[in-house]
Image (cartoon, rainbow, N blue to C red; front, top):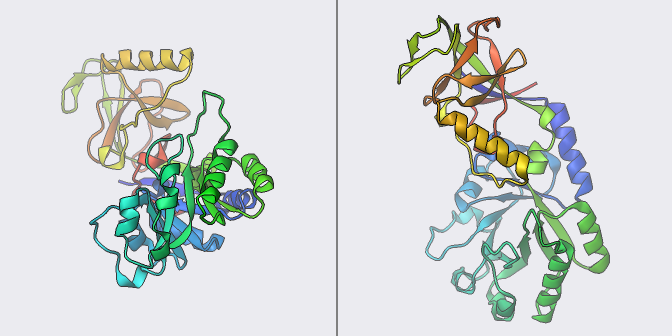
Length: 344
């Protein structure tokens, strides 16, 4: 009973190398569930890429991957006053992010820091007016970080936003040697390099690096049971009636894996909105498409996913799988916890 992620390893690594070639100085990101692959595996892959620096989400993640990655670790979550200190063995390898003056002042003297700037994301960061007040004399300043929005419906230029921050940092009398950027394409980086040739712009990339070639990753669920049902037969926790003759398929993957759980999405355009309304309407009558497919056909959930398995309905007329067969599923890797990753 296994939910697996099968990797075409050679193809996957070739994609990583292509992204590295497009973004010289790239900083790989391994955080959260490790984009479905696990942070330890991604730390090992980052070591093979030879970037020398790995970005992680939290200080706890830095501790967890330190044994799998021999280089330096950049913690993306800003330092919070009063949080537990890092193990002494890691203090020289870990670079903390600070997003507030108070946090910068609270760090131990000599700590390595990257200063997060308040971009148009407006999530967190130092304001331009506060740059001159940074206590940089007591810290090892490794650079500044800009987390940019993905969409710009106002037509604003991300390159102009970054360049404005470089100018603001310089005006505050601070070094502009290095900036860490998120969500800026290679064309934008080239424009920045022309405008600021003495600044090292390093892109922090996770999703595109690890998941950018979707054909290199295949999610597979094991069939654990196949039960024939006739129209009207009751089944499951809620004893729904089968809508027609067919089979109930019990497959690996449930709420513990993230199957059936969906993060909110920002919807653009009328067609996606219409599809969303249609899905919502079907859900009100207990009809929900699953991410599982068999023989080229996407299957319906027979009922909401259980903790570790899901029950699917396969209508009559289709040859059912056998116990032990595997079904492909189209699932969001950043919200899915696989039982194993299989290199192929």
